[in-house]
Image (tube, rainbow, N blue to C red; front, side, top):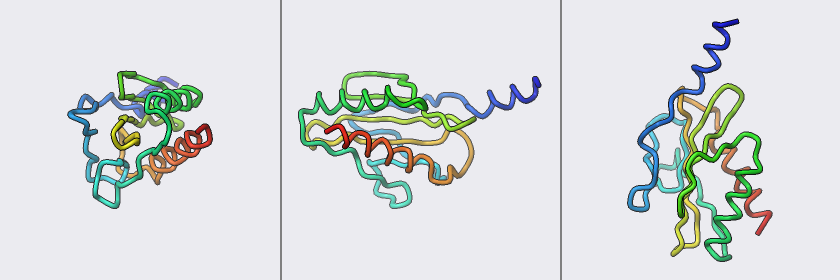
Length: 138
């Protein structure tokens, strides 16, 4: 039983220390296929940002509501124009980031697995689900 518990904890991995928006840019995706970002030109990793037409503050508040209402999501950092979340899938933890771009009326997104090579498309599908929830509330 102790080994099983140790295995569960080991799947979470450690929080990366390279996340956080720097001069309006989220961390780059690694070469592995377990990351998506709206700020990359690499088609393998590219995902569209969350677009909105309302007030930027209202849109970001709406996103926080969507994320707070999800049972698989924990908000780790809640800063002006930036959110960092942990996204859980059974035994694994992924790191998500959301960066408000007021000028272009979008919220840039990034989600990456902490461990492993492939995520079988989970980061992309989860962000698309968050997008649908976000747009449904506009």
